[in-house]
Amino acid sequence: MLFTDLFEQYHWDNIKDSIYQKTAADVRHALYKSGKRTLEDFKALVSPAAVPFLEEMAQISHQLTVQRFGKTIQMYAPLYLSNECQNICTYCGFSMDNKVKRITLNPKQIEQEVAVLKEMGYEHVLLVTGEANRTVGVEYFKKVIRLLRPHFSHISMEVQPMDQEEYESLIAEGLDTVLVYQETYHQEDYKKHHPKGRKSNFQYRLETPDRLGKAHIHKIGLGVLIGLEDWRTDCFLVAAHLQYLEKTYWQTKYSISFPRLRPFSGGLPPKVEMNDRELVQLICAYRIFNQEVELSLSTRESEVFRNHVIKLGITHMSAGSKTNPGGYTAEEESLEQFEISDERSPAEIAEMLKIQGYEPVWKDWEIGYSFVEPLTL
Ligand code: SF4
Image 1 (cartoon, protein in one colour):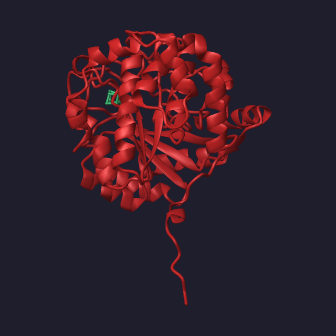
Image 2 (tube, rainbow, N blue to C red):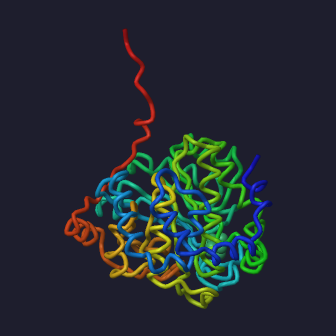
Image 3 (tube, rainbow, N blue to C red):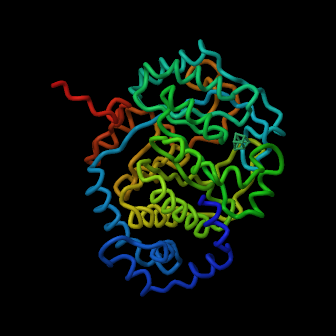
């Protein structure tokens, strides 16, 4: 069985109606029950009925996060390797129909970027590219991971979905984590936003976490692009996907991100706006639903918002990010994928975390930690 089999049993409109019909009593039940929350509880927590309970949700979410993760925030930095892309996506600055200068970093340029990231203190790097198999395919990524492995203890990737064997070959080179966001689980809207290129294959993307689980990846990141469709329904399907994956590939860890649609040159305005209070509600709902999942917040969000949500359930943050290839060094003029909102440096973020009583963690994982040394008798 794959998630796609389960997904066929879900009907968007039914899920949406059921979320919007939840009552205050359903929310209280979800908040104060003992034991694991169900998907029905998650619906209540993201419903409009939960809005008056935001303060209680924040307190419970904070307690659960501190119990599981302590007062720590893991730090990571994106490294944009290429803005070449063979897809048309209506919401992205790298879209193939956007007439901009295209760049793919060569090994020398990557080393220059790495030097800046190391200077900032980073041990966890997230590799990002457009989806362009001919220029940034598996062989390119193998070379990049080989180049980066000595410099970073954790390598994540947010690039095109791949086959299981391709993931296995990258894991063998030292890849730890793959982020693959479905963008939206609304199939009709997905088609409208992805009219051309391999990304238009909804099914292949939806099955990607299954292929990653079968490839025994250390961690998988899930999420949707908030603003494309009703966020409550989309995020319910993320929660359902997470629940399925945890049961099926229990040795893999999971993270969730909740990017809100950001402006970019020629960009698409959100179809559905999510305000700051609603994003807080969502963060708390994910945490109360699942105490193990990592929750990641990027520099898309503003300085003020990021300062305020540290204590609510977030476990991972980026800082000082550049979203254009070569952005940390020479190519300041190349196109960004989206506009950064929080422009503070990693040192400034680390200081802000310390003031709030949190510890910034630069190194959280080492591939060697997963092996038990054989006993010598
Ligand atoms: S979202 Fe990804 S696949 Fe779509 S245009 Fe942007 S880089 Fe390409």
